[in-house]
Length: 234
Image (tube, rainbow, N blue to C red; front, side, top):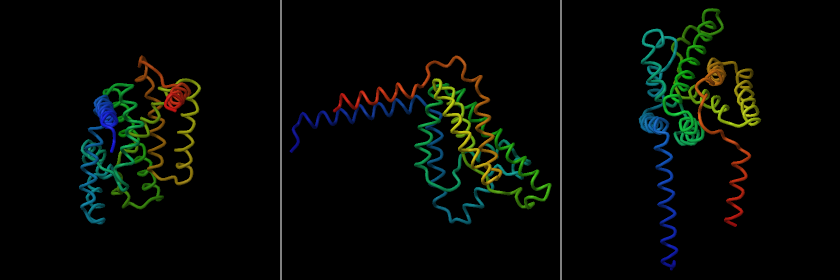
């Protein structure tokens, strides 16, 4: 049987952890409200048959047809659905990138970066696809292609976070992003790869939104603090 004092210590640790999690979530409300919406839509998708799900998502896609008929609706609806995969990976990615950016930039500036990436990369990639259709490199049916998801906004936020890092870390981080998305673009050369690479460039172009933001992330200092914490715990 556990000693009563040990049980109290464990309960106190759990309460502190829960308070810290709640405080972190409240500090990035846009990120976690968006995640909550994606959680709901993911559950809705899992209740559909695969063929039904594809038709359902195509109506909410930012494809050429939808962008030409109702662009605002297409852009908003496409950002609320995940095409394949699970929700938990997005919980991790949003917490690492979106929440960090929102806490650093503030909700308004963070949302601006997301919109610049989502809208800008969507139109750039769909313009490339339209060019391919017009020149016979893609079938005309591609105007109704399935293109939903949140990855363009995520890529732009990943890029803008380079400015949150201290030198020289920001240069290495930016280079890694360009290599990662650049290899995919050269290797696959799909319109979505064009969109992702474009979103990264658009994120870098959001530098003016980062001016005057307090604090910078120093990975080396963070590692030293983490190592010191483990040493004290040991």
